[in-house]
Length: 93
Image (cartoon, rainbow, N blue to C red; front, side, top):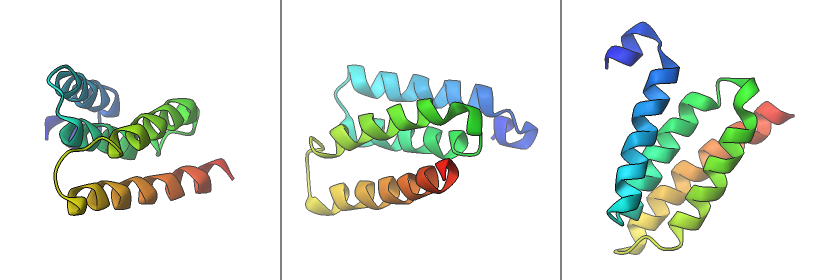
């Protein structure tokens, strides 16, 4: 919330990455994917970080296939992923 109020995307991305890394160490793929997708939303606004966004999309795509639980959870992630992927492709031309 503080990062949003100050528009500090660098620190917001660092916090989201810390959350994603914690989830990765505890094998919580669904939440890790959400953290990474949220980070991607912030990064898509910065054209100089396209490579980082591409890496995030690749990582999330591999996470979606291993998310345990119901099919609806995977579909939620896929929808979020696809929206972010469209934004990525639109930004790259």
